[in-house]
Length: 461
Length: 163
Image (cartoon, rainbow over all chains, first blue to last red; front, side):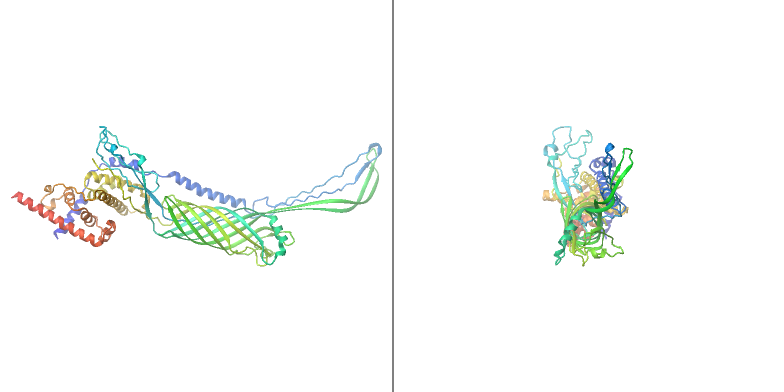
């Protein structure tokens, strides 16, 4: 009972205790060692996010069906229509044949393409404890202007999350207002581990793709080689891009599970130029004779052969669009204050659509649209392209407790063809993507700071 | 914030440091730690914030203590004379209590501080000090016994002197 009373007394004594502290002095001492707000980093982040959105929207707009100049057909017909005119001897003039050119340009509807890719994110971060050490001479300065006794100890084992600062607390001499300075050469770095709990992340991302189109003849149909060559000569790959949103789970050990939705668009150019020269026999006036006054005094009629040249130039932008559902797993690794992750997984195509022009068996350009009532589309492409494998590495750097930005190179390998079963050719898009994005932690990361075990704190004198 | 936190945290610092000088050092270091890691604290609750600050301060103090004991390999104690202690327990003030507590071995003093004054459980103390739960209980019992002995001895001495 006595014991409890005594303990109660101690507790109350401390509760009632009000130390006479000089708050201003404390603030003056600690203020220089407080971290400043990292405004620039936020600016960079928002520029990155804003830039990605603007680029993505710009690409989408550029490649939208409303964009013009996607298709041109040029026909050039050159033929003689007028008869030769002969003058009488006293005023003989030869009028050469005139050429008539017909140029026409059509601007049909067009669509566009985009690409996307998946990415993964890690969770743990590292921090660094920077320590300052002091030389004995500094502490035992013989200069009478300096106080020999340290008043406030150097705060040498303070943990900093951004490696930007180290803190050395030295209270100025109370009378002279002077202070010692640490030797910065002796700064030591010590890793401090930050342990994390299980985390969920949201990852919006966008990026460019380097597409590799694989067009080949399906087995057993080698006699379509000429058709394949014609297709290859008319279709050339352009850019591709994509964007998406991933949900990621990372456990304490750094194992990652990812799932997300991704949109990809692959753009290609269809270009075909046909030149045909034909000869036609027409009946009409062959020669005319004029006198000095310009009056026709004689004419002859008969059959005449003319040369007709027609140039057909087809230029289309084709767009292959994918909406994919991705699943993946991986592992993240910590390197100082950044992190990388290696991931792999499967991608299932929910929607595939092609809009553009391809050559048909007769080498005639055929415009295809997914929901076209002609039904041609189904002879060429599937509505879902099936599964694809993907591998990615991801490098990311935390900005604050919630956000990190990341760069994510990714390889995509399709496992099945895009073309319909009854089509002669097999078509796949392999791609190497470079995505940029931000990773948002859905719950705040709890960080346990383990401080350095070595202290170089000088001994008081 | 300094005005609010300083007196509150200084209480803890004082009990874990050997002198007012050290306590002031500890307080300033803890405040820097707190301010520089404010973004880790998410709650709006004032009590939770104070508790978070207290935890940082105590962890910081214990960490310093460990380092110091590693360096010196022995327990250094303030050997302020006990003769200045008042006879009657009810007259004890904070300075007297500190003098009294400083006469306990470090491990007993830490457990006593954490359990009796800061209100941690033995399980929490075992985690914080990296010792067994049973050891925490033993240290507390010994601390209580030692305090009793010191007080009894001093009381006897002062009674004799009075006679």
